[in-house]
Image 1 (cartoon, rainbow over the protein chains, first blue to last red):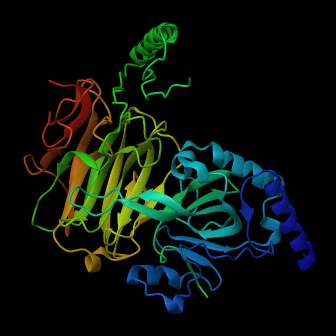
Image 2 (image 1 turned 30 degrees about the vertical axis):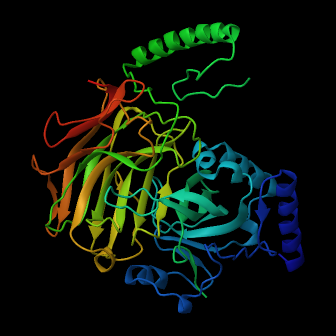
Image 3 (image 1 turned 120 degrees about the vertical axis):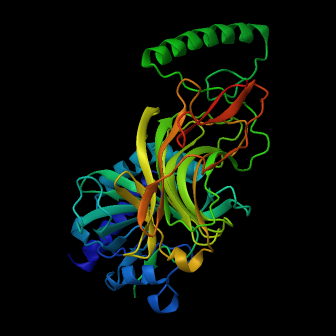
Amino acid sequence: MTAQKAATLAIAIAVAIGLAGCGTVHGSRAHNSGRLISSSGSHKMSKVTLDPAARRFMRKVPYGDTGYPGLDLILAPAPARTVATPARTVRVMRLFYKLRVAQAILGKRLRSPEVTYWIITDYNPLPGMKPGAKFPAIVLTYRNIACEAYGPPSFHGPRKRICTTVAFYDLDNSRWLGIYQYNDHLSAIKKT
Amino acid sequence: MRMKEREDGTPRHATSWRMMNVVMVLVLLAAVSAEQILTRNGDRMARAEVFDCLTESHYFDGKGDKTTANRLGAAATISERFGAVCDNDQSSFNFVTTWAMISPSNGLGWAQSGYLRWYNHCNIVFAQDSPDGSAVHTFTGTTCQQDGGQTNIFTESYDGGCSCIDQYEGGRILQHTMYDPTKRWSTPWQPQFFGEAASLSSDMPGNSGSPEQFTNLKYQDSSGFHNYPCMVLTPRNDGAHKRTDGEEWFNETPTCPNFNIYTDTAG
């Protein structure tokens, strides 16, 4: 697909989502929605200090991809042919808005996600999912969402946090993989 | 006037006798229907929360290990029960949760997994860990669980392969620590098994007839997982006093070391 067609597709999706009143699409090129999802902008491997466990995981993350060390999840840029159509994107987002867990976590911010398209290239297998399976995904990201530290009775510090909140949707199997919240910049790392 | 609803479906107050009468009839019908439904299901759930959340903090009902011998993990089978939360905070900060956890004794770090629900929500599975008590990483499932006493095993297991703690629901790793807790946490690490709520006006899940059960309690050390013997875990119940609605939280040990927590009429 030419860059012009890809750009047109991205604009079409953005317009559709805009008309549906639900969120924004990031990435001017649909074939590369390679935008880092992180609590504080882009982080290069060379600029962050990772624990050995996370460093081991990041070794298997290809350059240009984004790794979530705590989930063993890798996001690769999505080719244009795998990007969901505007109509499907809107359907997925409406499904999300109906999820009670999403309503509870996101409250009034529910309908203002950043929408991005990716290929998930690795993830802890869910029932029926083969290890190493690759599949297209829609990722909804919300920044500055209130979240809670549960923790043990012996923890006496403040319990409220401000988190980046990310929801992953498996387009092949039409299911949500889960919602992930974090408040540090090491939870989502783009390898550059 | 639109009235605020309680989680048990009863109104808080009425503005006139007429409204009061209508409400009384509706409540009666609702109560009869609810009674029939609950009786039919054989699962009379605790739905007795107090409307006003009052002072919100973190309150616990369950048991913890105060061992000075270092442990590496924890596991428990936890039943799924409904716990009503207070009503005038409808945000995600108004929650009730039950979990298994491993944490350092100073509380500055943890790894846990279990059930979680918020106001007007259903039970979901979740996992959370923290390297230091400041950063938190939380995974929440998106599927509503049941609340009829079904059970699930929640395990926090130190994994030497990744030098991390895997947080399980059944056989599925929900997430794992992206750091090596042996490098971050002080010792000793202590297993914990608790119900937790943001308000004492909320209910611990279950009631005396259908309590929230913690069974198959285990700890992990360097040689693997072991069943807890009796009389090792220390109970804690922050809600062991009569509330304004006449209910209180309970913490009972019918078959040691297994224990039940629930909310019911204060004894």
